[in-house]
Image 1: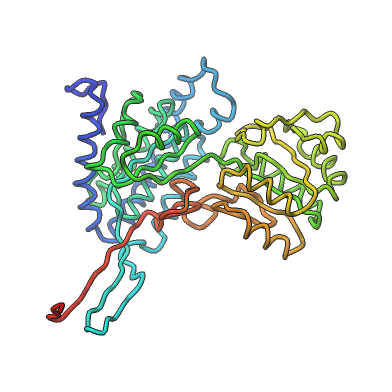
Image 2: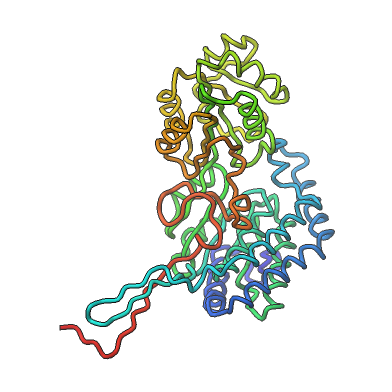
Length: 426
């Protein structure tokens, strides 16, 4: 990896990023030809390196935490940045889980036998070079690097400046795994700078980068949408809803909503707004408030008639991804009103319904145009690991190429293999 502070060319970020791109493109060619066993060995050895260097990763992470000690970063941000022994172990376990999955490359997706004797196979292949731009969470670099290795893609990682020390050690572990498998270490590279111009340089790298994946807040996503010259796979914010239908089992609903909000408030799968049917709101809200005593509730007029002490929800609240122990509360008249409200304010990430009425659940899930829709489950299950992918590179909220949790399989494209025996076209 390049460390701009010691690079003899100085701080020409555009030049550095261009060189990273050229190295990545060469590495992608080699990685696309690697065997399944080689790529899996790289992941297993990288997992071992993460475990062996856990103390180094935690020491580096402590420097990152210290670096924001005098900043205005909130508790949710610090939680996303912080690594623990368990989280490092989880990163290593994710690499082993990805290695154990079926190879996403070389799969025959379709076969066509033409009347003229041609046989055409549609085969899964790598995308090429992926630029992963993410904020604060250093484990994202590990997940992204691993998923790209598994899917035969080279990746250039541009993590948040606050996590730079952690990212350096994590990428070194991935490089160690690649080297052990006889694969180019340049298949996973870090843009080792806090200079924000590096992001724009990646977004303009049309000669070397095939896909950009941003994972962060609205500011980052807006920048990518505005500046990108390279195709993008967007991971938008998680303004997620849980709708409690009139048929809901109230005990079940209270447990689901609490977990969906409070298990980890700073992740994109957390529920930010609970929507409650008016017919059961007076039964649900007092119990929900007791269960969420450690969470600030902000309600509309109907909710506050039941719980007058609740703070007033403003129009801004309906559009807010809090990533904190705050949740808005909306009371609606019926299923149609619930669907209309969720569809109006959802960011398209994950939305859920709690209902014993299966027909109502089916109607909600069909109507809500989000990447993930759930029935009687916590929105915090919206996660690549929980979907059996080992890890995720993000939750894609668009509709092209991939949608929902993006694992190794979603990081492939395809091409057509055509087999003939002398055919000539008239």
